[in-house]
Image 1 (cartoon, rainbow over the protein chains, first blue to last red):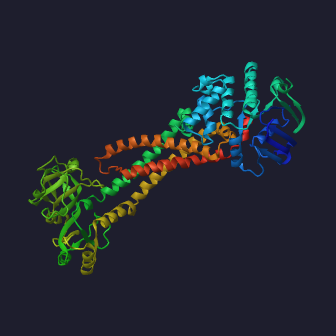
Image 2 (spheres, chains in turn purple, green):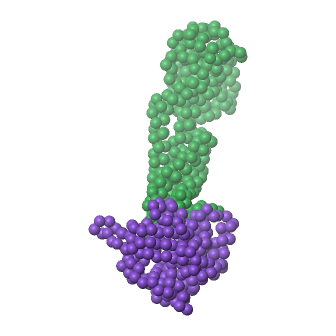
Image 3 (cartoon, chains in turn yellow, brown):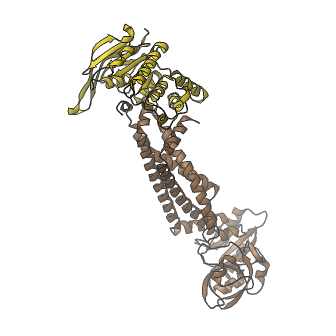
Length: 234
Length: 377
């Protein structure tokens, strides 16, 4: 395994204000390495999404330190956090979050456009990314013309096109049937292995265990157990 | 095509009904502003049309004259003093005034008499379509504009009428010399103008000064002012500006036109702001996704501003076409709407500023986006 791509040390997060305050995370320590696919599992309300948001530089922790590819997020403002996301993190969402008015190619290209990469080079990269997820024949299709599995593949292409060190996925198979879910997981496992990305997947689905190198269990805002996943055992 | 532009374009056209409403708002606003400003320019030109067409280097007028139509009088002695000043080649008297035009049918209508010496070329009718200037030296001769035939109860050359119980005959016809007051201009010899307006023989409303070829205008003006009491001496540009200021701002007409234009801008801004705001709200999820995957705020602002600019270009293009039609339709009226290249450039800038200003509300909304909401939507 390679160097850590994310290091979270003693993370605490309090959500809400006044009487409605909730301690969503309580002293979480987690390290993600490149080339490793990690599953983050836990019941609803356990703090999975909050932890994902903090690791993905969308939320700042109330306490603790997060380092993304060696960059501390301490005292980073919204624009600095956006820059860290842009340069180091690719996101995959449960409900895909594709742009309905853009083609598959443009949905991928936008991840480059926000980094200032435009023109023919960006188009070639977007087409290559779509080819890697098996959608080179759908580059001109709009999201409404794609199946759920295909839409999630476009989202994966968008996540990897900028070659980030980290891929964070929130329930990427929850909206898909079994076959599509397995295909997506194979794709993500391949991305971790072949491209050396650190992949963290939040999921409830125990069927995904076979694809994981590591499984982290979180309950009530604390990491309660870590174990090797099916991929490692195999 | 840049992706920001593509995204903005698709966002706009995604809801066509709302886009049409936006464009109608912009078109309504810009047409309203165009009409108001075009009227302002047209009015400004029309009120100075006599000054524009007079052949003078300087105008001598009674002190306190506010505009061309001001009927105060000068004395012939003041003219002789002007002629005695070195550098003054000519001081051509002009007489103006209102009079009643009695038609052959017996009914009357007010007219505005403009009298000058046709031989000197001081203030002669222009755009002649029938007759000759020289004919105005013949007894009872007048020139009128053909657009006023109905008002004057005449049918063309040779027609007769009475002013102050004195017969006049139409010997020349012009095209397009219209008064913003809608009172027809009647051109004639200066002596006849005195008779028809009741101005004494030795009096005149203006003296149009023509300078000798080598005369310095400021020097002559200074000497005119020091030698002739109770007069003002203005260049055509100064007199034009004074007349325009009086009619546009002294009467409140200009303020009314500007108020109408301002209303148009406010209405347009509110409509565009409302539609951009609701469009942004509808696409908030997409903007949150952009933010989540690392887009800077500036990138999102660019999308919104691009939407505003696209709306501006489409709205302005349609408004410009409507404006051109309005200009064509009003060209032959007493108060034509005038659109100049400068006004077109100004209106386009105004449309852009209006639409970009309208985007502020949408931008403020986007500023508050929490990227983490993508996990819960």
